[in-house]
Length: 248
Image (cartoon, rainbow, N blue to C red; front, side):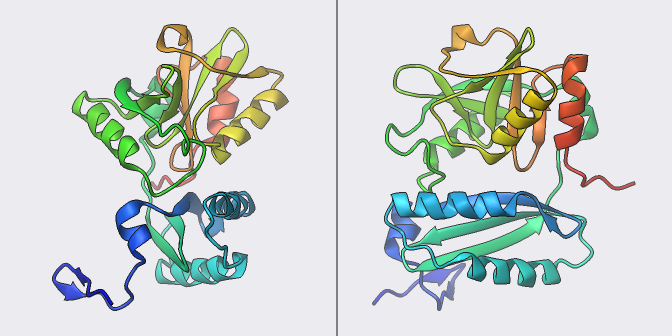
């Protein structure tokens, strides 16, 4: 029997030790715009598959849908939310907070990206797990350099993931999906949209010297964010995926 204090107060519903201290959990984050959760079915499907891969029983979509309704009720009138579902051993967590996307200028001018020294886990990189320390360190390093996002590599030196987004590369009419990291849901939506625009889409492993072109960042919090001014042919795709959270 453990006794847990949270900010000095007893935490009655104790979390499993494996979740609290060892990162044995999977999670997904999604955006809710004016009451509509984006790609909810895909997020729950990935959460279940990643949980099963780590041996975590899935309690069913119903518990998360009930939590979603309760969280939305508590944030009534907030135009945009960031929602997170977490699955652990015999427990699930649901949380929401108001979401503020990057400024509109970032979608026209781009953001800075920094290649960090951090590497993804060789066995867990494709899963969205609570074993998240390399990504937090990568984001901290990037912010220390004045960048919006930090990129991580695998053991062979391929650029495979971002600290909070999935990286892509655009060059001469082809969109390259950088493989080796998390199977990003927003990234797949980007790929489908690119094909609809008549662009080629390829999945590749690239080292830093191969990143010639325009880097793009895909994620639930940002949609599709360029790392520099985007060419005109990408403008419809960026607009289509841009968060609809702006006011005024």
